[in-house]
Image (cartoon, rainbow, N blue to C red; front, side, top):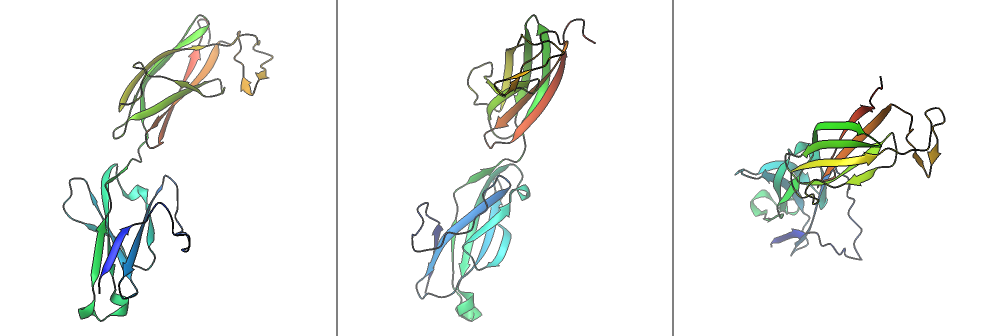
Length: 227
């Protein structure tokens, strides 16, 4: 007798019930297919190994299902591989037990949000000049956005126009909307219109990495003469 294990196909078997998987950024879902030539009952053990490590560490043992959901916070940022070992022990004595195993492709975990450094914002005429640096320790920066005075989020490009590095610099101008006095603060088209007479504005920036972790920072901007 022998046991064969392989990753679960992306096209599910229409005659098999779907495996219950948790799908969120805080969980790592592992699933597999396994068969035994004698239709013996199988149990599984799940191991992991990080980049640069030589020893497989046991995560779960005695699993009867063909899936496991792992807490992503147990894995520091980096690359990992999963190994699943199947055993037909439930159907045999210890001396007759057979095992089979399979190893997953390498995957990456990134739980740490990007950091925003040196956020600077200064009123210059009818706009605010904004500069900052975004940095991530593991994966590239994917995008950055800003909001002025709780208005709608606006995407902004890095200095190099293409966001594909772990470190990106930003230098851009944010227009200050006119047409509203400080006392009549109005809202148009679902977003707040900044007051032309206001001497203070709140600028919020947020930056995402490739794994959708987000870092946020803000700056309170005062116009010349503002208190």
